[in-house]
Length: 587
Ligand code: ATP
Ligand code: MG
Image (cartoon, rainbow, N blue to C red; front, side, top):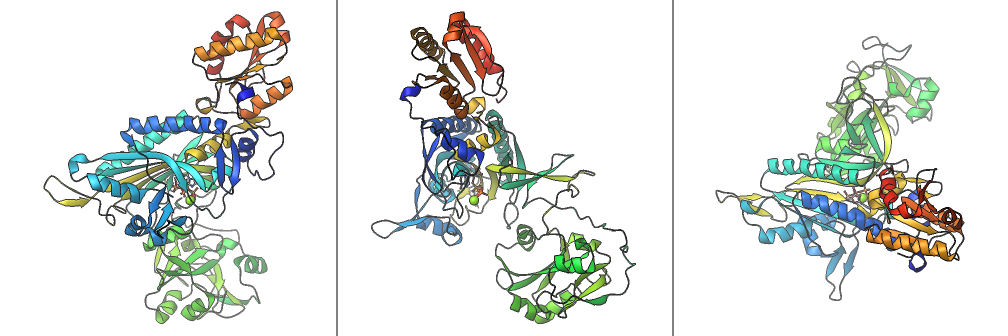
């Protein structure tokens, strides 16, 4: 491609709206152009990168038996009603009407469409397993579209769906898909981690997310510094670890009798801890919820811990959890707002509502000389001991893991946090969709069963940006080799010099013949602009051809991420290029 003919609208300055390196560099480098919030034009350079990613994804999906399809972006309401998601999928689902007032939505995902499609054809166990995938446009009306294509409203996703006769076969394939994902991200040259993810409250199924590690990521990866354990923040487990002893505090069984202390107008753990000069982890806090709208649930947590609602939902096996309003919990437990505590709480709430339960996080069992509300306005109770003064109906893992917590898997590892961008998700769906959508097959005995499903997503457009988040410097993008828009840029530094131009064109033609994808910068601009643009666009290798070099019979080869150029005789240029590219470290 000739740069003078290419549609590469690079910008001199950073666009004002750009909030992360990838957003800034993809706009500046002429890869993307904004059309509306979360909606972008894919320009030739951007599309080239995305197509390379798609091709790698396609090859690895085919390698595990996937067959490519293309499903509609406009999907009828009826399919989503059949699965029960028309009502559940909130405002992210963009709904529209046709001229006859029939309702549709734009594809946010495709479980309904594909399951219906497969059901029409597959009747017998003999046709299973089957895996179908597509690489296509998705639309989600995200509340906060941001970081350019990292969280767009319109984006491209590879979504794959597998159908199996048995749980075992679905589980086997889940591991196969995970393996394929690792191959994909390895080939893309990215640093990533597969992490355990929350698979929703209705147990049985499991899921993993693939995170590209980057400081600008919106997700938190919780990982063990000793073993292989890694999970997302929602999922990360906490060990049932109770020992907690501060200098000056009592051990279990040593606390003095509970005593009320005056804490006028102070409700929060923070404020009361400051007043009483007690560490926050010596507090027990009470949190009131409605489970499925009608069952009161009170959680007991240590003062320094935060409730993980996804864990609570899983424990209760529900998907509808709402915070209780103040007036309702006052009525339920009899304490004024901000002064509830764990003492006798289970009996109190059950008296008002027999369905109520008190669930404690494991860590409260370590509180031996604690503090909490006293059920009286403006008073807290100190010297509360677990077991002696308070208990819960049951104990569960309810809190978010913290940095430095003990690893839930190995003996002496500690948990650490790292930021990441979710680029892929593998999910064991079980029979969640096949039952409502009646996706059944007959086994060898002629008995009908719902198909067991898995689904596997990769954000192919998000990956373009994720790769930039991981690979850039002050001058621009540094593309991994496998997805770079061009293999090399030939910079003709003195375009008015016939000898220089002739050499550049010759090398360009030979490079194309040799199968290299090259961009010849033949623009009538200063050499400095060419250096800058080649760096900004992030092409792995530049072949610099100028008057001074030609006079000596040589050209300069420079890798995007190396400081030292290499000089080679003009005639040896094409031999040297593959060698140079081999030593490009962003593979
Ligand atoms: P997130 O938590 O980031 O919103 P998600 O859990 O909604 O992601 P999935 O429904 O699992 O995502 O979709 C599969 C993949 O599609 C994700 O792993 C991600 O790479 C990509 N993706 C999801 N939402 C967006 C978006 N708004 N813009 C770009 N890519 C997205
Ligand atoms: Mg989402």
